Image (tube, rainbow, N blue to C red; front, top):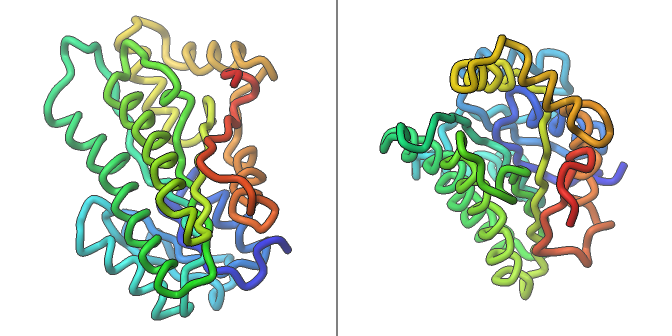
Length: 258
């Protein structure tokens, strides 16, 4: 058990990658505060089979300042400290650049950048106060490595995640807080139904074709699955990564080489 008795916060933990990481962290011995914008009853349904004494479910919106404080204070009240942050909550949208809107920009950056940064800051303050260091893992994307014509705001938001990860790692190194990122490639989560429908609209494709094509284009021959990210999520949160910071690890089947 690589995370035995550690306390982790996982945002966007109600589905997809976040849920997979929560379950893996629990398997590795951690106590986990699961944060999601879903209603409390929905979260309880998702984790009906989980061990309740090591689980803390928090319904919260990471774009709200009071929610940021509540996430950390509630976790500390329940488990006594915070050792790990898996900063995963994100939203996606896309459209041609000439049709992009203020509203979509504000929504994407509010969740993917503002919420990510200020929760990281708040957790880091808690880690500094309690002492002993900590691990922060921010979810970026291969979309943060280069722009895309139909997803300019999303790509820019994930590039910001990579940059903030580097800056935070340098700022927090004296406190023995490691800050790293993970850049997934194309991952088959429930969100891909929405993504595929948008590509169908803007590229005039049959529904399902884009998903098939991006999977075939991955060097390893398929889209990723949420479980493919959990090994990296555990490694970067564990003592095995004590000498790694300011890095964003590609977990993408070979899509991006660096």
